[in-house]
Every structure is written in C-alpha cells, then in structure tokens.
Length: 344
Image (cartoon, rainbow, N blue to C red; front, side, top):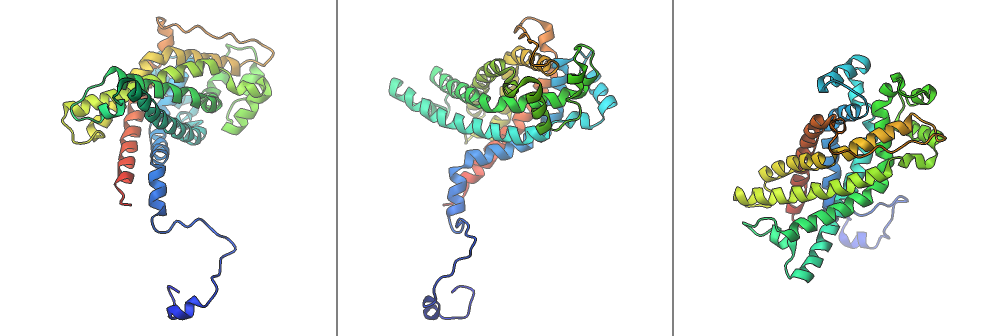
C-alpha cells in the first residue's frame, strides 16, 4: 500500500479497510470537474460576499433617505454617525451577507441557464444565435442579443423575488429600526420600538408576530415589479456595453478587464435610474407595514416617476451600485476565467 514498506504482493492480499466515516473522493481530477461544473455558482457567491462588504454602508444610507427625510446625503451620514455610531452603517449586514450571496448565486445560475435556452430559441427562429453574435470579434448589439439578455434577466429577477423578498424586508427593518423607534409619524409606539436593536431572526419573528407569516412578503408586488424590470435592464446593459467596449478597444477577450469594469459600473447606474421610484415606493410601503399592526390596512403608495420625493437617495444609490457592480463583475469574470483555465 502507498506510504508503507510492504511489497505490492503482500499488500494486495490484505482486505481493504474503510473508515466508519466515509467522505466523497475529491482526489485526482474530481475537484477540477466539480469546480468547472459549478463555476458560475462559485464565482457568483465569492464575488457577492466581496461586493456586499464594500457597498453595504452606502446601501444603508440609501434605505434611510428613501424612508425618512434628510436634507442631503451628508445630513443622513452625520445624523447616523451621531446617533448610532459606526454600527449604524453596518446594522443588518449579517443577513444580507448570507441572503445576498444565496440570492445572487441563484440569480446568476438562472440567468446563465435562461440565456443559453433563449439563445437556442432565437437560433431556431432567426437562424443565428445571440450568443454567437456577442462572441464574434468586432460585433455590436442587435435586437436579438438585447432581447435574449433582457428576457433571461427578467426571468431570473422574477423567480428570485420569491426568495429574496423576506430577506430584503428584514434587512430594511434592521437598517431603519432606530429611525422608526424615534419617529413620531406613527401612533403605534410599541410596535415601532419593538424592532429596535434586533438581529435578522428576531426581526423576522417580530414581523410574523405583528403581521402574520405572509407579513414577510409585504411589498411583494412592488418587489416583483422592481426586480423583473430592473434585472432585465441590468443584464441587457451589462452584456451590451461589455460587447461594445470589447469591440471599441479591440480587446482579445470578451471578458476584457476594462470592458467588464465599465459594463459592471454602468449596468447598475442605468437599471437604478429606471426603477428607483418603484424601489422607493416599496421601501415606503414596507416601512409603513412595520409601524402598523395586522389589523390596520396599509395603502400602497403610488409609483410616481415625476415626483422629486421618489428620487431621494438616488445619488448615493447610484454610487453604491457603481462600486458594487464594478467590484462584483470584475471578481466574477476573473474567478470564472481562472476556473476555466484549469487543465482537466
């Protein structure tokens, strides 16, 4: 046997012993095959953790400005620091670290599968696959490429909403819990203060206590609308700008680092600019749900695209999105490229 001084003949006569605890054999080429099979999931989860860490303080400022009135971003930041300290900017980050990692991994897995499926459908109809067009040197976006990526993004966003809605609701609660506790806009002081200084699990239990199990899905319709439309725009923009950037810079690879950074930063800006009033309406509605019991009806606010109030926090949100997505996609493409380069 390997690692002993016995001869091969002698060792072959001995019955093979197994440990009571047996684990999958990850020796040889199995780890490489596993990594290549799940390269999208590995890249998405790793990149999600990194990008969430980098951008979460800006996300917290965005949520506060959407749900409460501040004179400016600087006013929000100074008020948060004065009343809650540094922890105010990271409160509620534990749940997103786990949930966003899971949700983004799901979103990218679904998107990748849908992208190839829809590309095959387009090929049957038009005779040319959008993915072939995109990877052709010197090419530019066409109706079929934009439609393919948009449809795949919309499908991904809609499906993932069923999982992400409760997580995002509890995250919002944690981010604005101190503001809710000290606000006089709602007469239900006991309910408002009950969310103060709570972790994600206790927050979820509190929501169920005050609004029932389905209370975790408060604002689901607005969330579904935001993520379906937003994710479609997000991936259409990312893939199209990346394609144009590669062509304009004469890059050798469709995942050129410069093209990825430009596309990653811009896709978040474009999508948030388009869907921000929907996100604001969702945040306001969810805040109102948190400050009222289940016996009180909460009216869904109107989505007003031409109301200045619905764009509060847009600047910080776009800055956050630019940083988050440039970080995410740079890491995502780098990890995928590294895994693909591993020899079988």
